[in-house]
Image 1 (cartoon, protein in one colour):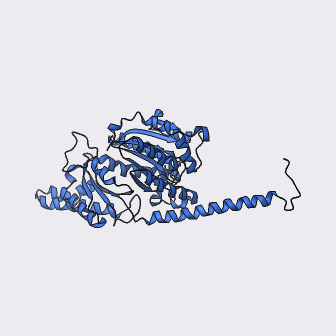
Image 2 (tube, helix red, strand yellow; image 1 turned 120 degrees about the horizontal axis):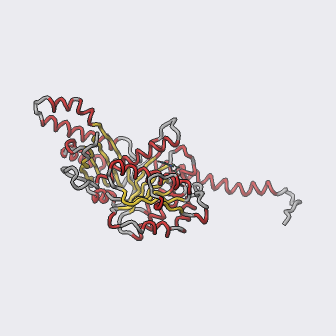
Image 3 (cartoon, protein in one colour; image 1 turned 45 degrees about the vertical axis):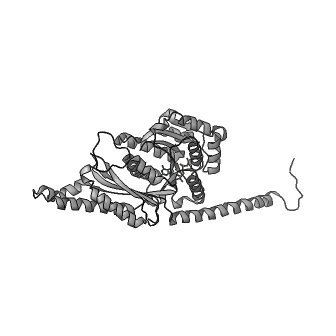
Length: 392
Ligand code: GDP
């Protein structure tokens, strides 16, 4: 799938940078256009793979390149004010060459959290291609203001995009890791998952012939209908299998192909289960999901059609949805077989409800302190008997 990506804010920019690195390393050619937008100059300068001319600093007249300080209302305002700069940077993107737009942002901050949905709204107004967002939720220990930002940004992103793919930092936190080291590993996880998903619709001509290759239209159809999506992933290294039981069956000259095929089928279906029931980018109930897509990636000979079909049927049972697509993504030199599961139109997410609850508490607390603070300052400054007067 060919994407025009916009990394908005610090997290958005860093993840976009990693996507470009992923593309170079895997030759996947997913990112057809890359734009980094920020209110903080230093963050833009820290990027390594986004070309200089594709970095846009917004809000200079308001915040002078210093960022919006986790104020996402201000983030939205400056994006609206400088939207022409962002959109004209997109003018160079040949829209007919991209299948969709993807806006990437940390929803807990200010620039991307507020500005991302503004850009989505304008892109949707101009282009006919779908506009998706990859929104990152803050981990629950980040505090009230980040949670409040995220809860409001989440609502706005869902309204302004054709689908919001969510990645929850909270689900990937490793105790004892430094923030920076932690984010590097998390960002790698993000691009590995989403890179495989989006790469699936982009099989090169002359590449491996597959039995049923996933097309970008299948990704688009799974995401169409809007709402919120989550992604599951599981993989198994081939080496281990080949030196294990399976290779013995293969290599003993017995030619027991049916057993071989049965093993491969079972392995494929078990990977689908692991991906669906394991760690999702946003934890939520699988039952009740509106649409699903299953992608099996790896060397063709391991992508067993029967296994994929069985896995797909199993997903239909688990989700209760009749709209589950499935196919393969042949990767000749991959050292593993992977299963990527896209669950679109999720509705039962305790994590989101909990985030909203904390956000409401944070909002009430902020309002209360603001009200009290006017009163308390008045008490401090005035002498109580009105005997003192200010100078002028
Ligand atoms: P902005 O620059 O004002 O848009 O704000 P940031 O992008 O710095 O981010 C705010 C939120 O994004 C934080 O609260 C974190 O939850 C998250 N975040 C920041 N940097 C990263 C990163 O590199 N990776 C990930 N996964 N999350 C990040």
